[in-house]
Image (cartoon, rainbow, N blue to C red):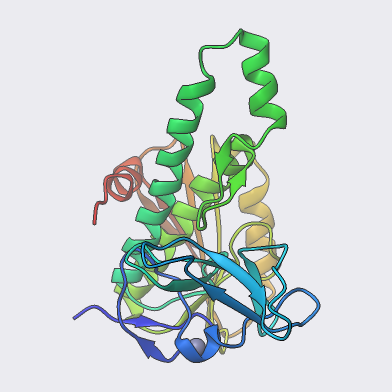
Length: 267
Ligand SMILES: [Zn+2]
């Protein structure tokens, strides 16, 4: 049976494919504003909708969906089937293959929303189109329902997919356990276990031989002793899966087949 853990306290919660990064009730009840005031989220009526208030005064909460639980940035929203759901804005942990799959599909859903949004602006004059792509929020955040600059989304999407290919690889090799992730530009290892007995760096590029990223990651990981160390990457000009070991680091180049398999995933 599918399992899922709360992103903040790691207790087991019912599996929800559409919400791979949601919080348990207890953690959700601790949602506060940026300056620490408790918040309340409600549907507008029986048909759904979303409204946000300060819990103490019932004043409307101006940031609406953005909230914080134990200093982790989260996104509160109406649940597709009624009620309220709070998720971390990026996945913080992933512990099994079902959650890998749900997150990949989530990335895909945000790509679909951007595709619809781009279809609407495609027909304008060429430079106006490029202007919109460069400066406006024509895309969507990969893991929550907020607008984002499309180029930014594009830059994040394939690195995020490779992070989940990496987690998938580690779960198949070492079994289910909690893998922490630093998605996007956050510092720290891209994937790691709590005790750092397993650590991994991740990237995706057009051609890794023209890019210093691989060397930099090898240098970064070489100085660590004890850990099982991995580098996962996708390099468009080298479409075959390949594995090698350098300085005690297992380097895994995912092939185009692995990437396409994950791009084709469906619920
Ligand atoms: Zn929790």
